[in-house]
Image (cartoon, rainbow, N blue to C red):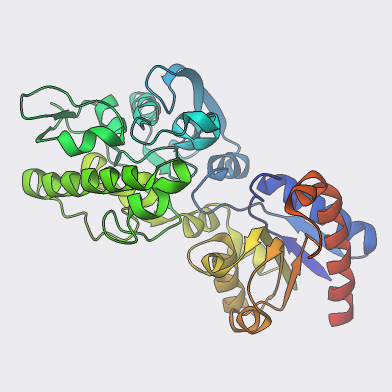
Length: 375
């Protein structure tokens, strides 16, 4: 039997590469007669650049003294570069990511995408023929205004003064001033379809995950609405109802308005660039996985992308996840042939995280047995 292991990361436990390796080694131990290959995947969020760099034999370019998620924070961050195609990949989580902050630093009124803008500026100055911006894992709800500032845009209040960095300053903006020179456009990879504003907008859905109180969510929502209004009236760009505009605290919409960005499906782009369909055409089963298999897994995530491509080629699909939160009917309706949970139902989550490598290996070996029985 020929198996392709194509997992996403298991947040808090494994990178996509680590998850693929553990699953593949466990299956090979049970069935050494099978051919097992791996292709880590990502959906445009954290880990995307690493996967594309590996697939294209790219390199990392270090940029010292970049602003972190909070003004006053300084760090060294890197963007990826693919010499063969002249493509630069800026992963916003590396400069503006939530994982860079301690719990008491999760302050979305103050966190900024400015550092990501510095990485974009460095990539543009290198003369990259294409710039990819991957959204995901952000600490910010600033509509991408911080990144825009690093690239020469200005956001001023009624007195003509620069508003403070961060989501809290958005409500005070009265005028948007473009940079003197036109910037190269970017392609933006994202994994959500949320709009910038409204009940499923960037503030309402994502700000609480980044530390916002209910009152702060309201303030951030008003700020994003103000930003959207100014972008539409002063720049002539309609972004309020743009699918994906709410990604990364509104950076999706900001990238369109300030960087000439095109919002693209992250998983579709990753699959195309690693030639996933070619790999899929050579196997009998594909095993994918992530931390939690739930309804969002079927909406623009790695699992949904794998299912779509596998259906087109008649390849069977198994999903191995930290937890499976879809009922058996939903699993079958999605086209998943086997779904397996890594965490035993009776085990506390904290204990499962502590024993994640052993549990994933055990689940993969169990999955190998089920696949063998399937023929």
